[in-house]
Image: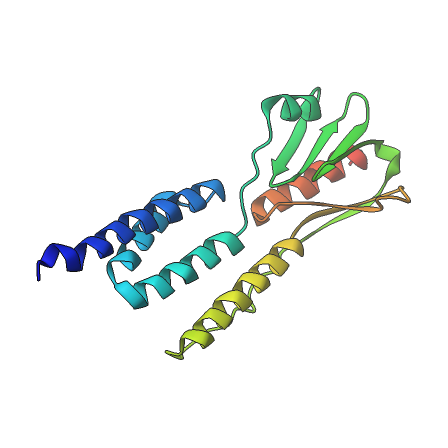
Length: 196
C-alpha cells in the first residue's frame, strides 16, 4: 500500500480545516493566523484532531466579534464632538458647545441634552471561569461552553452605564472594558455635564 494514500487525506483535511478555521476567525475579528494553525494541526490527527477542530470552531464562533462601523456612520456620530468613544456596537459622543450627548447601542442612536442625563456609573466584572481538570471530552466541551457564556455575561455587565430621562431607553451601556478609559470618562462626564 502506498503511503500517499494514507497521509493524503490527513494533509488535505489539515489544509482545508486550517483554512476554514482561519476564515471563520477572521470574520469574527479573532486572530486568524493562530486559529488557522490550530485548525491545521488538528487536521493532521485524523479522529482526535477532528474533534479538536470542532471544539476550536465552537470557541471561535462563541467568542465576541469586533464590530467595525462604516466611516460615514462614525463621522456622523462624532461630528462636532470634543470627546467620543466607540467600541463594539456601542458609542458615546459629547458636544460641549451644544451641550449635547449622543449615545449608540447597536442600531439605536439617540441625541439628548446634558439636562436629560440623570446619572452615570462604570462597572468592571470578571472572573467566574470554570477550570476543567478532566480528560473527558464531554466535560471539556461543557467547560468551554460555560466559560464562553460567563465571559459574555461579564462583558455585558461591564462598561459605562448612562441613565437618561427617556421612557423608551432609560439606560445605555457603552462597551468600555479598560478601567483607565472608564476613569477617564467618569472625569469627562463630571467636568462637562456637572460643570465641575
